[in-house]
Length: 311
Image 1 (cartoon, rainbow, N blue to C red):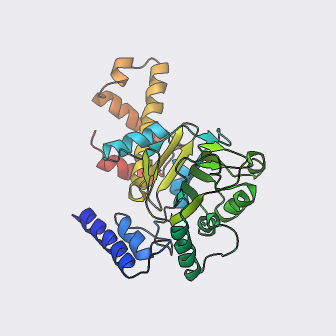
Image 2: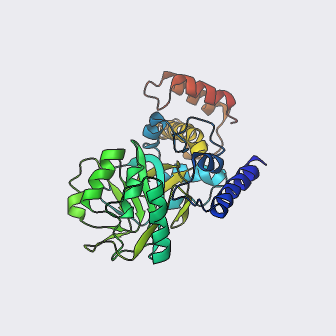
Image 3: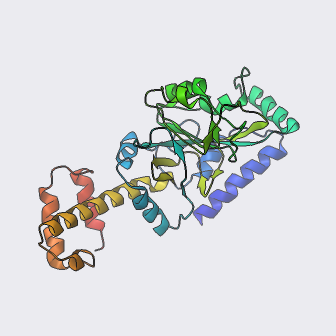
C-alpha cells in the first residue's frame, strides 16, 4: 500500500509540474523522496538516499552473484547488466547513482532543456553533458543512458573525466561511449564501464533529464541506488536493501569459508556441507564464528543477525 501511495504521489508531482509549465531537468527533493520512499535514513540535499560510506566499502567484497541472488529473492529481477568495456577490470567500484538520460537530438526539446537549465542556474558554457557532472559529490557514480550510441555518442573525454573524478572520487557507467581512452586511463583512481569508445565528438544527442529513473540495458536505475561494478558486470541495488543485502552476503561468505575449510580438513562429507546442515554442523559453525577474528561485520551486527536468523 505504501509503495502504491508513493508512486501515485511521484506521478502526481510530475504531472503537476508539466501542467504548471515548470518542467524540471532534475526532480525536486520531494519528488526523489517519493520515488525512494522505502529509504528511511539520511538523505542528500537533492533528496537522494545517503547510503553510508562504510556500507559502500563493505559492498566491494560482495560478488555480483551473491547480490543478484538476494535481490532476486526480494523480487527485484531487473537490476543487472553485463557486456562492458572496462578501463581497469581488476578494480571494483561502488557508489551512489546519479542518473542521466540522453536522447537523439531534437531542436525544440533541446532548446527547452537549455531554457529550463538556465532558469535552474546551470552552466551555460559548454554542452549540457557537463550538467550531470556538476551534480556529483564524493562517493557518487555517474550513470547515464546514452541509448547505446557509440560513434558520435561519446559522453565524455579526458577533460570531463578529470572533472568527474574531482567531484566524486569515482567513475562512470554509460550505456554509450567515451572518447580518449588513453587520457582517461591516466586519471588515477578513475574507472569506467561503457559499451564502446570512439575518437568522435558527441553529436546529434541531447541531455533530457538528471536524477530521474533510467533504463540501462536490462536494468532499471533510480537516483541514489547503490552501484556494485566489477569485471563480471554491474548491479544496481535499491538503497533501502543495501544494509540487509550486505549483512546477508557477508554471512553467506562466512558459511562458505567454514564449509570449504571443513571439507579440506575432511571433517564432513561434501553431501553434509552441501545440504541442510545438521545440528552438529551448526554448533561447530557457531563455535568457529565465535573464535574468528577477521569478521567482515562487527560482532554486534553478527550477534543481532544470528538472533533473528531462521536456520
